[in-house]
Each structure stands twice: as C-alpha cells, then as structure tokens.
Image (cartoon, rainbow, N blue to C red):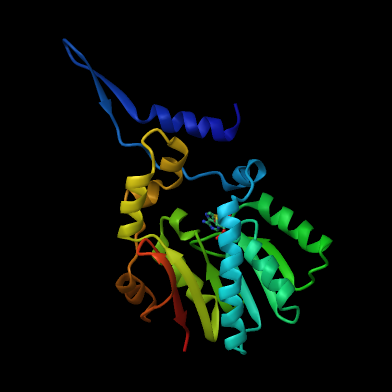
Length: 241
Ligand SMILES: C[S@@+](CC[C@H](N)C(=O)[O-])C[C@H]1O[C@@H](n2cnc3c(N)ncnc32)[C@H](O)[C@@H]1O
C-alpha cells in the first residue's frame, strides 16, 4: 500500500463513525475530510486530456495577441503550468522572450524540462514551486495561472502573492472558481465519481470561491474580463500600474 492509498483509506474511514449507546449502534456519517490530490503521482499516471490540450492551444493564440499588443512584455511565468502546452507554443513563437513554468508536481516539471531540452527551446525554463506561497522572488512582466486556483484553499493569499510576482506596468491573468463554478460542478459531477468529488472538494464545499469584488478587495485593483466561456469560467486581467 503506497502513500496515496493510505491517504484514500484514511479519507474513507473518516467519513463514518460508530456510536454505541445502551440499546443501539448508531452510525453517524461524518463530512469527508479534504485530502488534496497527489499531483506528482497524477502526472506520472495521467496524460493531458485532448480537451485541455485544445483549450491551451486556443489560449496560446489569445496570449500571443496580448504579448504582441503589449510590447513591454519580455518575461512570462505560468503557475500551475502542468504539461505546459501553452508555454511550449509561446516559447517557440517568441524566441526572444523568456518563459517560466512552475508547478507543485516535480514529475511534470522534470518531463517538461527534458522536452524543452530536446526541442532546444533555450528560452523555456521549469521549476517546482507551489501556491499559495511561491518561493520565487524574481518578478515577471506577465504572470498567468490557469485551472489551478481551484485546488488552492488559501486562494486570496495565492492571488495576492501572484500579483507580488508582477513587475510594475506588468499584468496578471488568471481564472478562478466562483459561485457559478460551484453550481455547475454540483450539477455535473456524478455522485459516484469519487475522483472528481475529491479533486474539486474545495470548490464543491464553497471554500475557495472568488468574485470580481473579492479580487478587488484582495489586490486593491478591480480586474477586467480577459476571456470567459461561461459565467462559471471567467479569466481576468489585472494591470499593475
Ligand atoms: C488542471 S491542471 C492545469 C494545467 C494548465 N495550467 C492548464 O490550464 O491546462 C492544474 C495544475 O495545477 C498544479 N497544481 C495544483 N495545486 C498546485 C499548487 N498549490 N501550486 C502550484 N501548482 C499546483 C497541478 O500539478 C496541475 O499541473
């Protein structure tokens, strides 16, 4: 039994408690404890889905237009980069700009680093780092964070720290879970889909939901909409004046 199986077992056992009274055994279902997904293991056993890859390519076109428009952008960081489809496209398209991918999973960072080396993309770098408190001290002209804040409990700390990583006159672009995301996940995740329930436990419990107003309160700047597919999936842009 490995570490992940032990975590899962603990997770399951903690959901039920027995109380013995004089006449009855009472079974009390306890709320499941949140056990974060083991992303390092995830990326050793799972490939990026076709849907995620296609969306990353679409996002690469949108971010490319943005970079061409804002000529002052020379360094770009992506937090929670995963397999980094977005960064590989951008690094190839903009050979004179520097791209940095960060992720909590050492396994995906190692794979990306080897691939960047094979493709001789010398402007593409990867490092293990995690939210909400990244170790990185250098700053970037554009910081991105896509489909990652859904897994971060201290989401306000995370966006504050991501904004800290932005150079003056730089930009932060991210998407985040909101009340509509929670409603959509509650509707769409099947009751027997334990993986998805565990994966999105924070969002389903409403523990890390943001809104334009909460973002403004946290960062001190009102975000602008960058892109949205639905009300449940909004990408915002914040300029650091
Ligand atoms: C759903 S994937 C998104 C990948 C990519 N950004 C995309 O949009 O396709 C979420 C990524 O966030 C990473 N991640 C999860 N929690 C994290 C954390 N606390 N800090 C940094 N990365 C994290 C995971 O390892 C995973 O690669």
